[in-house]
Image (tube, helix red, strand yellow):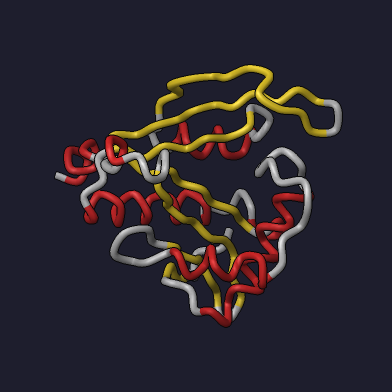
Length: 175
């Protein structure tokens, strides 16, 4: 188990490692819904859209190696009624999964999101993403919905699971 990693805001120079981790998730088939690999160029704008004040992006790294990353982004973008909620996504390098890195990243992002003023954090994932289901349930997320047959990957029907967590509950557990 890796224990000596830091969680911080990434530099633009770390974007290639972030893209590599995302592409691993794409190749795993049941993590993203993307069907083609991304490039540093294609994710450059995405990277720049993340501001620590509104929609942070964090990485876990050891020395100069990015182990994983987490982001929050608008839930139902441009629909003001949903501004108090955000969607969370996270990806861990294949070599470093199941070592507590994902949970640490999600925990840190929950704290940041609550500090920004968000009230609810939502994760949308494929039903075959067992690792994420375990991570979210271990972090006390609640399964709120299951949309069946929403897509298909390699002739396998995909369901979307909606998990959510009230960030106000963080205050109660931290007191």
